[in-house]
Length: 298
Image (cartoon, rainbow, N blue to C red):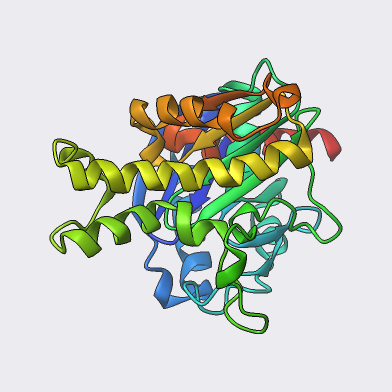
């Protein structure tokens, strides 16, 4: 089985060919998201045309930013970072052109499925997955499948309220919420308030000899633990997988494991906290697996 796979993010589109569940070619181009939905769809079709010159393919798998209806393959909602993306009928448009099954899934859900089938979740049929980056994404995996909720939007862990005093009813949805305090953006903003020359997470970790930076990092990890504490007590998971580029820093997982037992009931202490294993290929591999399921449905 050979599938074409795409991972559409706000900054870049990763894409490639997956043959017998192995990525054999992976490429990346800028999304140019502000050019809007039509530009993204035209880009996708151009890439599919190019890849189709190299090989026959059986299906197309797409991991994408935005809230997705995976049953019908369209974007339920996308924020203004991708203008006019809300309502985009990805599956319908591509299946009408290429006459192969097309699977479409939210990017965090696709990454979670990738980890479930090929990565850190292979031995765990049930787990929670969180990704830390510009915001915080989440996914709920049950029996190696995504729990989507009543309208395909379950797992918005970044919108979990962790600072009630900062929540203003009728204000910004994310006031007082987890991603305002525990995302990579939150860490960089806190470090930049101390030193405006810091503009990335990488720079934070290059400055760990600075006691002030150490303190900022420690507070940020505490914010991560606050959110995990709530999720653990609600879901009672056996495993939580943490993703996002910043989680490649080993000291983060070490500190989380040090702090978490102080925050949860002993009866929940069996939960295993892992970092994601597949890096930036998780969404592509998840899209490949879902594309394969669509082949069998046809």
